[in-house]
Structure formats: C-alpha cells, structure tokens
Length: 326
Ligand SMILES: *[C@@H]1O[C@H](CO)[C@@H](O)[C@H](O)[C@H]1NC(C)=O
Ligand SMILES: *[C@@H]1O[C@H](CO)[C@@H](O)[C@H](O)[C@H]1NC(C)=O
Ligand SMILES: *[C@@H]1O[C@H](CO)[C@@H](O)[C@H](O)[C@H]1NC(C)=O
Ligand SMILES: *[C@@H]1O[C@H](CO)[C@@H](O)[C@H](O)[C@H]1NC(C)=O
Image: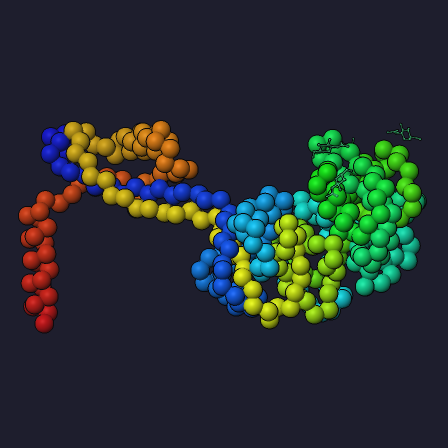
C-alpha cells in the first residue's frame, strides 16, 4: 500500500480567501442620484453608506478633497408621520418609549430636534433654532459635559464630535447627566432628532453629518451629497453629480490545485499540511488569508491521480460508446 502511494501523484484542492476593509470609490462621472445608485449596484455594492466617524474619515480619504458627490442617504417619505427618532451617537439605538417628554410633547411634526428643559424633561423644537447650550457625552471620561455656547443643533453636534464624543445620547447618558447634578441654564440640545432619511444599502445607522446650513427635512432636496470638510448637504435628486460607491467587505476566493508525491498517505496529515501552508502565508505577509481544503462529502482531501494511459483508455471508451449511441 505504502509503495503504490510512493509512486502515485496525489491531487487536492486548496481554497484561500482574503478579507478586505469596507472601501469607498469616488466615481468621477456625473449622474442623477438614482443613476448613481444603479451604477454602484452594478459595479460595486451600493452607493456609500456612512455609519460612524471612522467611515466618515475613510469617505473623506476616498474623496481626497473633492466635494459635491452623492452618497447613499435619501429621504424615503414625504409623510411626516413616517419620521423616526434617532440618537446622534450612532452606537446608541433609540428605543420606543424611552423619551422623557414634558407632558404634551412632542407637539409638532416640523420640530425635529430635542432640547432638555430645566426640570430635565425633553421638548421637540426646530433644529435651526439657536439655543444657548448643549450637552455632550465624553466616552473617554464617561461623563456628560455642559457647554454654554449658542448654536443650532448641527453646530452643537459638530462641537461635541470634535471636542468630545457626541451629543448626549440615550437614557444611560441621561441618567449619568442627572447623577452629575449639573445645573441647566435653560433649553439645552441633546442628541435626539427625527427624520425620514435612510440609506440606499438599508443600513439602519442613525449617523448623520449635515452641515449647519442644511435643514434636516428639506421640502424638495431629498438626496444627500458630500460637501466641504466631510459635512453633508441635501440637494435635488435629479441633479447630475459625481458620487461615491461602497464595496462590501468582500472575501476573494481562489482555488488552487496541489499535486503531491508522498511516501505516506497525506490524507493522514491534511490538517498539519494546512497549518504549515498557513504559517508560510503569514511569514511572507501575504495578507489576511484563510486556508481551507475543498472537501467533498466522504471523500479524502487528496485523491490518487489516474495515470495518463488510464485516462486515454477511459476517454476512448467514452467516445466509442457515443458512436454506438449514434
Ligand atoms: C459610566 O458611568 C456610569 C455611572 O457611573 C456607569 O453605570 C456606566 O457603566 C459607565 N459606563 C461606561 C461605558 O463606563
Ligand atoms: C472645540 O472646542 C474649542 C474650545 O472650546 C472651540 O473653540 C472649537 O470651536 C470647538 N470645535 C468645534 C468644531 O466646535
Ligand atoms: C473628552 O475626550 C477627549 C478625547 O475624546 C479628551 O481629549 C478630553 O480631554 C475629554 N474632555 C473631558 C472634559 O473629559
Ligand atoms: C448629587 O446630589 C446628591 C443629592 O443632592 C448627592 O447625594 C450626590 O453625591 C451628588 N453627586 C455629585 C456627583 O455631586
């Protein structure tokens, strides 16, 4: 048995796959928002969605200073009752019923941002109103920070994201704020807002990065574009602009056949062989590679290869049987 193996050539199939980071591609062609969406879905994965500050950094890097380019955010409904509440900090999910409303609030579907009152209750209010303060959350110190600067909700968000983590988001941070016994001057912005915007790739991320001049629910401008300094502007979806596609985290699969002459049955060592190959890939910095054997059910990894004479005779047989059929 060992001797026949010594002379035979064994065949196996090895797979490896490489993981790639979420990638953005700036497309320098002018298209309407929906044309851009189709293009991205054909050539990449979808129009770019931006889920947090890290994504925003990568998006800005892909744009490399170019602006006025569509991203995957668009307004999906004209109906104000379809608006959904979100927290500014994208890792905090808004839970139905957690809002600490003042009785009678929220009282207007056109008021899409939220302030905290002196008695630590929440009111909806227009986002462009320049209130006199806001509350940031600082993740590294796990504290809330009271800032007494006058500004719109977007300006407050920008300040918090630059100097701390984000506008105060979620009930845990609200409780933290109460424990700190900070006194509120009057109305202060918190991280709660509502809109009907959503992502082309169905990401349910609440991350928004509007510039301070963009109202959050414009009447006609229903698509979002990257503007200066990574901030977003809404515009008419029919306008032709460059755009940014996203490529999904793809794993590229490559199939390789391995021939091996061995004095012993390599099937007994297939996992050791795989480990050795994996080490070789890592030692040579060939990327994040994951090796697996391609296995058929109940079949060994390595199969004995037929000799060339065996192959010839079998193909002859096949062709002759074909002839008889005809
Ligand atoms: C932040 O502090 C609060 C109260 O002191 C604590 O309950 C919570 O677990 C802390 N959160 C984090 C993320 O450290
Ligand atoms: C960050 O804080 C500094 C100092 O308070 C302030 O001048 C600056 O405007 C803040 N950054 C933003 C983006 O608001
Ligand atoms: C808040 O966090 C930042 C880092 O994100 C840090 O540099 C800063 O000192 C913190 N500020 C406060 C008031 O804790
Ligand atoms: C906040 O006030 C309460 C009661 O007035 C007190 O027990 C607590 O220590 C205070 N917390 C801080 C962080 O000052």
